[in-house]
Amino acid sequence: MKQTLILLSTISIFFFFTTSLQAQTPADTIPYKERFGLRVGIDLSKPLRTLLDEDYRGLEILGDYRVYKNYYIAAELGNEEFPFEADNLRVTANGSYIKLGVDYNAYDNWAGMENVIFAGLRYGLSTFSQTLEEYQIYSVNQYFPTTRIEGPFETSGLTASWVEFVLGIKVELLRNLYLGGNLQLKRRISQSTPANFDNLVIPGFNRTYDGSAFGVGYGYNISYLIPLYKKAN
Amino acid sequence: MFRKKIKVGISKSLLWLLLVFCLQLNVGCQRDDICPESTPTTPMLNVSFFDTEDPEIPKPPVNLTVRAVFYDTIIQFRGNDSSLRLPLRLDAQATQYEFILNAQAVPQEGEEAPADISNRDLITFSYTPEQIYTNRACGFKVNFLNLNAQLDGDGTPWINTIIVEEENIENETDTHIIIYH
Image (cartoon, rainbow over all chains, first blue to last red; front, side, top):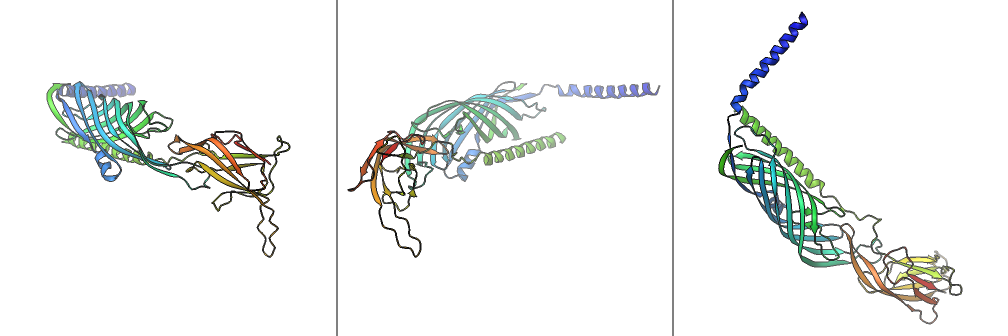
């Protein structure tokens, strides 16, 4: 008898909650129109690094266009002068790059919000030159003084291409103004290297790793959405 | 009102998370690349000494002192080994070494210097240095090609003949020069 009472009361509580939830649902299903448009912006990390690191200079503009539901076509266009220094050599890469691809917004926004947490895929292409500023010949035996060879030795007309997986967010801080950040994992597909040397840095790809085709990167950016039309998602 | 608060809260914490992550990435990626010892870099010249009378038998020279001409530092002082490893100059096409047989010992305090019975021979090793990129940590190395050795024994040389066994110095395992004496 007591058990039946508990069971009944549990069921009634369950029903109470489910019905009250159902009562709320219709209010949320009012079709809310979301903004579709072109978002353009610039990367903030590169100008910041330009200020902090006197050997580095870089700029990147970026944009995305919402084509369908949560899918965006996205692109980045940039130019970098990128130094790399190791124990026995110093190089600078200088060039431009373009990245083209798609983003998928995986974030389920509340009505009225249009923030983005996305996963994206890019194809990157860079044309650049690499300058060997100076180097020294490595010898374990130090009987003779080390030979330091001053450059610059420049090889221009180099190219590299890669695919990139991006994870990032874009948060609408003010109306139409977004602040974003992302992390990038890259894998090189092709590259041309200087004779008897290697690409130690590639603009857009960042530093390379010996014996590996992978690379990493990050970016912070600020962008503005130019709304073109409104449509229910 | 409540939603707006949550929205700002989420945005803020996400931004902080991102900032911390990026800072860590900045620090973490500045790994120091160090050239490992196992990587073959600029090789040294391997010299072996053999007996003139019996060319199959290694013959260590007695109390051999070796140093590069015009350099103060001695590479080997009164050594008695049948082989020797010598560095070569990277900034020139030749390196000149002096090989002093029966080199004078440094007298102990209060002792008289022993009679000088040393015999000094000069050998000029000439070659073509070839620079080769190894990797980003080790940078470049040099291989020495078209090796040639010339003896200058001023009157009474103790060295009989020099044979270039390996013309190109590309590793440290081969014997490159054989000296018969």
